Amino acid sequence: MNFTEVLISPILSEKSVIAKDEQNRYTFRVNPAANKTEIRKAVETLFKVKVSAVRTANIPGKLHRVGRHEGYRSDWKKAIVTVKAGQKIDMTDLPK
Image 1 (cartoon, rainbow, N blue to C red):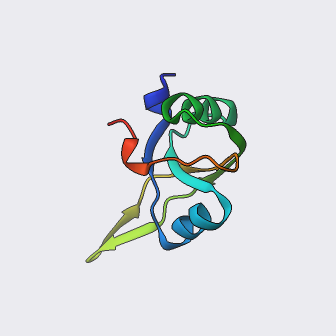
Image 2 (cartoon, helix red, strand yellow; image 1 turned 90 degrees about the vertical axis):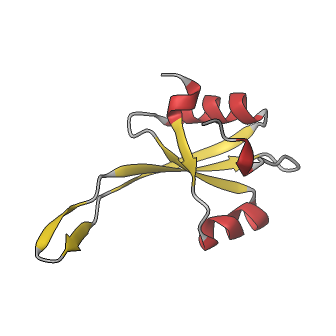
């Protein structure tokens, strides 16, 4: 799997921004087929930083209703990447 296929987009919620500022943890939406080793290599290669830990979570899709029609959003995978102290990731550098 190509490194640009592993990372889909950064997650910039209030909780993830606080974790980035206080604990040097960055949150990404990743390919559901990617494992922790692939995520670590992708972040280290694309952003030129050292990763100390990777945590992943599979998020189930939620029920979504529009009028009387209902369905489910897609399942997705989230990765929380801890970067070594003194290093930072510029979230605008994520390749398209």
